[in-house]
Length: 361
Image 1 (cartoon, rainbow, N blue to C red):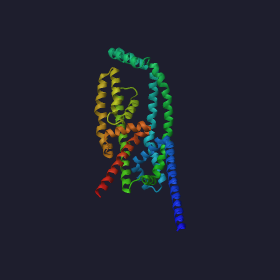
Image 2: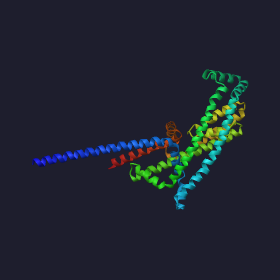
Image 3: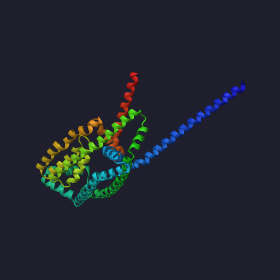
């Protein structure tokens, strides 16, 4: 009996030691996994824009890439063809646009450096004495000592920074196309891997991935397309009324129009003020009517068609998601912000559905 009791105590202590060893190994495995994931995210953060851009392009172009993959037996050739098509359709026009933007930016720098700002303020003061004195007093109060040369001194280093950013952008585009090639070629593997990582049931994972794909498609294709149309319409109006650097300011309007609701006003209202101060109130009125009735209202009519029906997200929610994403992730936040907010809302819907199912049992 004593041997049996001692044997049981020995077996019990051995079982406890094995259990503690298993718990320790589990904890060590968890800590190692967290460290590896964090380290991966840290160095992947440097490649955030190419990775997010490649995933977004893969989602948006999936109907065409899927058709090519089904038509051609080689997925590699289909992916290569998609890289060529995207390069020709997107990045080739973008190259020529950036080339003209650089030319106009250099011309603007020469204008500022040559004292064009001072000349403009002097001319405006002569045409509108009261308004000119108000602006000069405001400049003396807010920025004493500010003149055209000071602006030029501030502006010159920014050109060097802009050139460095362009080189960095070219490298990012090359990496984006590289990642995009593999996203298209290995689309099935990527989807299976993504859905296997989701802690959801098979039907929930499928529905979650489908809705997330619709959101990415709507935010990128819809929001971007609306902003492009608004930028083109405003740029043509700037050119028609004789605004210097119409292409540059049309591009600025396009960037502002990426902000939902009131983004267009941020661009065309100051330009209308400039046209009025330049002495042409008729052109200012024409430009204001065109931009308020056509450019700004495009968002109201086209947004529900391209974005609203696919996302089921309120304009205010998208506004917060865009600004929060841009502030936290940079340019990649234009996609990541709305996607993360939409993911949170989709997961909350799944929890609500599960709780309803549990309550019905």
